[in-house]
Amino acid sequence: MRAVDVEEASSICMGRCRAACCQGPLVLRLSREEVDDFRSRAASLGLGPVRARTLEDGGGLVRFTDYPGDRCPMLDPDTWACRIYSHRPGRCRDFPERLTPGCPLSEVVFGEDDAGGG
Image (cartoon, rainbow, N blue to C red; front, side, top):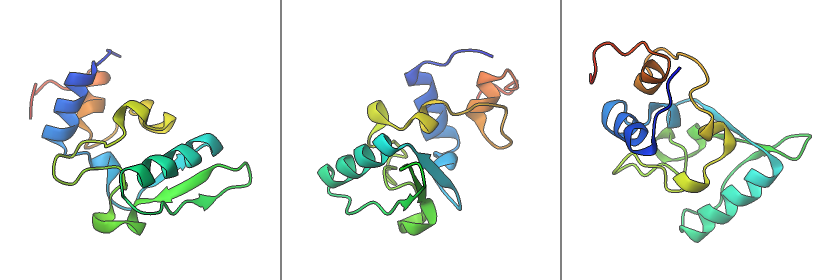
């Protein structure tokens, strides 16, 4: 496993796969604190209310299919950048946790990227 700095990760995610992990029929699991922070940041960015299904522990689930383009509401569709990158939820910070098919970042992190850029 190799560490990837913010600049390299951004280049891979925004340039190579266009943040595929932030789009489609996916669900983002948030802790109780993250739900409140996510909602607050969305409101301050003028993104409208965040719909999060509440869990027993107070956390929440954000379904990307509930938003335009089936994307995370924090994903900028013009740049493929996360609008709250420096404050992103733990699940996003920890990604990728393993080699994931179709994810160029995981290929770099876990040493499977022998193509070097494409």
